[in-house]
Amino acid sequence: MDFNQIEYKKPFYKIKAPLREHLRQYSRLSDLPITYMDLTHYRELIPMTDDQGNPTLWYGVLYNHTDLDVLQEQLVRVYELLVADGESYQYLRIESIEFCSFGNSKPFRIKVVNEINDNHDYFYVKRADASRVYGLELEEIFSPDKISFLVNNETLIEEHIVGVPCDEFLLNNKNVKIVNRLRFAKEFVKFNERCFTRLLGDMRAYNFVVEIIQDFDNIQYRFRPIDFDQQSYEGRKNIYLPQFYVDNKALVELGQELLTVSVANQYMREERVAMKKRFSVNKQRTRSLLRRMKKDVISSPQNRNQLKLDLGKYHNTNAFENLISMGDILTVHMELKLGIKIFL
Image: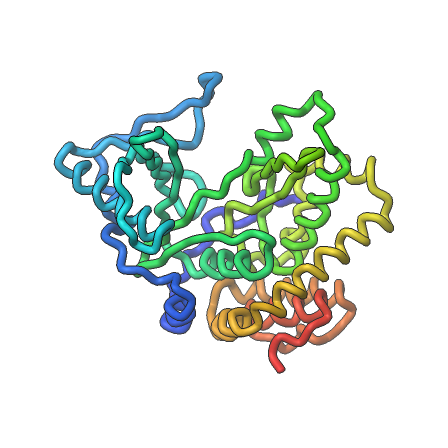
């Protein structure tokens, strides 16, 4: 299947008043001291390379000294809002500001350093897009992980998601048998099911990370998405299934080597049960989000019609025929996958 037709330059969808009200209700709105556009007034971009000297998609950003002093102070304040609800931290400084020109959000990556112990962290400043915000909220509700972000007008602030980009992990371990391979394969099956159930697309290996967890007697893994631009946007069903991407072929082959079909199906059922339980403790938040998503426009009519056809065939039902929004499609799809009734 050719995935080169995925819409890299997906249109930006404005965050409208109903979604903004949901964000206010769940403490995602904030009066930020800086905007995305403030960071675009740089003087120069310097291409960055990796440890082997290869070019990356990132650029170091240079500003005029007078502008930089103000930006650094404001960015420290943003970090305090993101991680400490605005409580002032001492001894923080901005180590670097970097820019990525690839993809839809064109993020700025900010490195924050604690001057006392040199411990550092990152966060991202991006253009706010309704698709991405819906994706972030669905990640908060239906994944095993929590994610922190803030929105103000056209600016989105995201925390850094810790992990090794999966494409790098696979490259670095190409000729090595990783520890606990069975757990690695299991987690990909569950990640694949989770992405499909909540219709998160474009999960190629560079759009999710491998979190490596040292358990008391073994190594554990978890896959976490880091790109939410393709939330309920594309029309083809298989775009929402990471197993169909060439980039993820090594993960699929590992699963085929280690897991029988019945065992893989068992892991998929486990993930659906876990998502059902997460819904049960987040009913009001889920309904608030989907109620707004059902009335919003975050895709094209062509994509909506294609996805209705694909999911109708997958579920063997005509329940999708008269649906008019991606929010409607996602709601019905999750109800069928999880065996729940979201709206009573």
